[in-house]
Length: 407
Figure: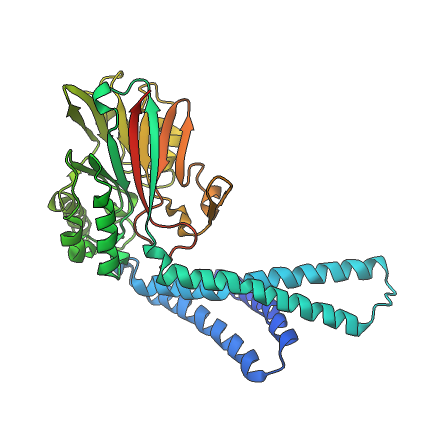
């Protein structure tokens, strides 16, 4: 018996129970058979399409747009139903508790049916919110670029760099792009910031170097007077695809590294550069990917060889878990770290100064935005592109601008 049989059986039982419960809402609201069975048919198509893509996909093709759309369609079906199931389950729990307290309930059946219909209507109305949000995220939200600006003060910043500006972008994921006009708009928006340097913190592709072919001319237009610098992310190593040979994987990796100079970026592979201004300098340190549970090619010590401890340092490290587990307590003192990787899971709620939530926060302590501990900062950029889910809901694509000030 195949190893996948029992896991698939368990998943199937969960789906059947979930869908049966969600169907109760529709049964309460309408007796129209076309609507009822149409509801079931849409769900069945979404599930079948998803599993078909999963089991028929060729691992050598990496993550395809077909997979992304299968995920998007499934979420469009599942999330609204989840809202409905939670409401109906809550209503059932209340009803069961009441019956448990008073076994011989005198409540009329008609009253129970009326309440259940009201709850069903309320659940359906609220379920429309995530459905509409997902639709917007798929067709508009993934290109809803936001420029976020921060001003950070440091006592040990050289005087010449007072007012120095950095534009950070990350997680391009060019293999997911489908609209050249929107991408060109995003690149223009980066240039409009007129920062001194542009720093890219990894994941230029999903898997393959050729994913960037159609976008080289677009990203070559990025300009910064004091240079453009970049590092690698976990997706740049080709670890999420099946390769015919080790040589093919190595060749793809070399081609990905070569993309960076082709579009005018100086790729830092566990190394550093000094940025000089008016006879003073700051160190720009770039490590390869280091992530908890991911590739740990990043070598902070090697990248910092030749850098003095008293130098002001900007560290580029793709995965914020590197800062959490290695960087923030390092005695060498990396004053500012720039990361990406999380995308904020491309789904969440952010009300500036009031409330922030994303499933990403249960995986990463630093999941989006600016954080400070012990006088050291990390900015986790939400990403320029998108991956897996073909959209963004509440967590918009980001261009970060940081101005350094002398305290």
